[in-house]
Image (cartoon, rainbow, N blue to C red; front, side, top):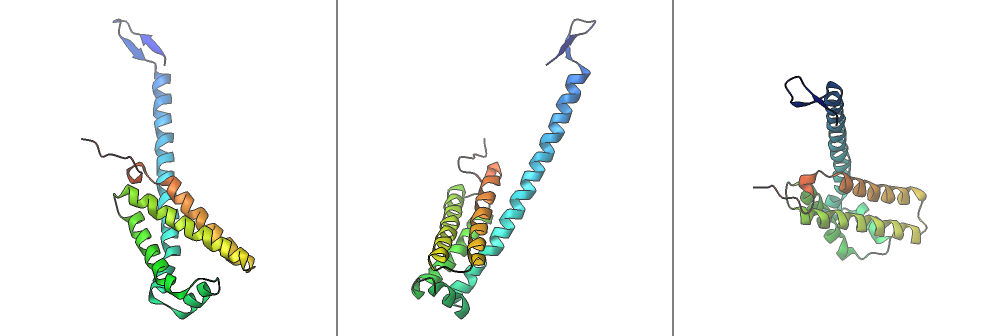
Length: 157
């Protein structure tokens, strides 16, 4: 930082240093806004993708048949659906950072397992791309989450 000694002997920041500081702050504010917007966009897309859990929970025939074709038993499908719905509530609800970590991990492992299942069954590439994409969206939402939604965040006193 540049200091300029004024006529009265006080050290002051130069105008150039102050201008750089203000500019850096503006860039940081834009980056923070972009990160926040990106977090909410990816999290909204993730929440939308997980709404399929409702169909699993309700036992919609097409959904159940699709999962059973991957070799999973019918009794596990409502549990997967409930887990997806609860995971989205945990991610969207303020606070509960440890539960958010588990929710993100659960969604990621569910999508990784779905990817492996589709590959093992030699399903169409579209199924594989969708599950990999949802896993990537999950990781992106997790990485972009604001500080107050992270494990270890304290509100201060």
